[in-house]
Amino acid sequence: MRHKSEKQQWLETISYQRRLNRNEQAELSKLQKLSGEVRMDEKTQRFLAKKLIILDDLTLKYQKTVVQIDKIILAGNTVYVIDIKNYYGAYTFSQNNWY
Image (cartoon, rainbow, N blue to C red):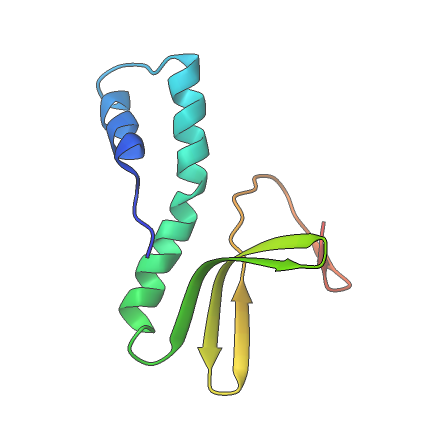
């Protein structure tokens, strides 16, 4: 299971005390994008870990292609592939695709 890095914890703490400079803010934003994965890890660990097989943060290589998968959950004969994104804006779901 992933946890917040010490650097992210430190940057979040000092951001409450003072304004972060441009580099610090960029680093914090980058680290916070991973926090959705951390929250998902916490929830799946709490509610599913005793019942299902959970694989985290897999990098798969096949021929000349590399793919990173945030989480795979195995439930009997069913495989759930979970890929967590941190996008902002207005989205629509149409013909099995997000736009």
